[in-house]
Image 1 (cartoon, one colour):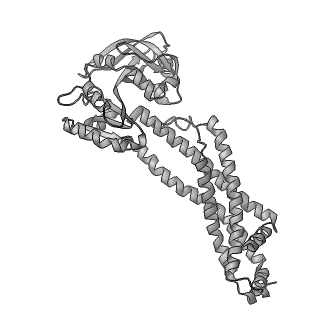
Image 2: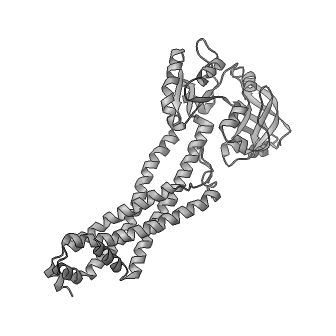
Image 3: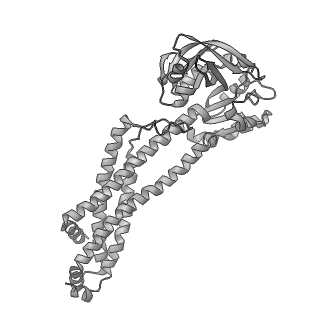
Length: 416
């Protein structure tokens, strides 16, 4: 075998340009895989986090009817506790369950602010400020002021929303809204904080206020439109979901729907499917680069036909000729995949701190995605791309190698 390896390496560089082109083709494909895998991983991971923070939690409890009317911000289908328990008692029970670390109530409704030029519509969220800061990344997004506190008529808005209504932190704003009884009312709030975020939802649409204040204004005493449960690990949410459903059913909450974060949003389910599709795309990229290797080896077989016949006549077996050409292909695959994995890893390492700004592409897309995507730098991405590059290229090298092994010595020696 050592003899064959030495011959394979010497033969590789008999035509240096052709070999280098083959290696570069593999390196480029592997580098693209590492980069793309890091980019997709960063985008999907960040999107999962955003949906968990601002939509689904790890487990979400809502009224079954509310699921169909959530976009209408209906206040007719709220979570108001169980048969013999109030919402506060229900939250306390859920918080005591195994694996549940936090229960976050939210009360979502529509609101608007009238300016001299237009009526600015917004999404009002009644929240527990302390819990929101602990669970989400709002503390990092607060550029001025503070988060809302219980019992106060105060709000926190995004910077773009503040520009639309021509207000700033410290000023007051009067908002109009529809109560649970479908009556129009208005209330004045102090703006205590400003959010500066890349996420349009936070920057342009949502206004936060204390949930108890929202409940009083809407005549929804101790009610919420949804409860978000935070578990020890989001990947284990499915394990804790049955006990939540059992608790709801036993307490007479048959009208409530409890869903894990993977079930609670169609877009998340699409992203999960897309991860599988991307793996086939990675495989296709390497197959494309392998065509260059196949072409190189086919040309080598054609050029060395007489040489192959001579080796066969001198006693080299067909199996050894097969191994010889596979070794040449494997060597190119190893070198190219190694260089590509290093190049892709270095690229992701740099871009992980810089990011890609896709703001223009996301302007009209109604999904929770950060317009600035940060690729992830992970050794596992490099190892995955290296392995797929070596395996696929080596397997494709078998095609020309078998052709060489099947040459008859007498026929091959006639080739001049």
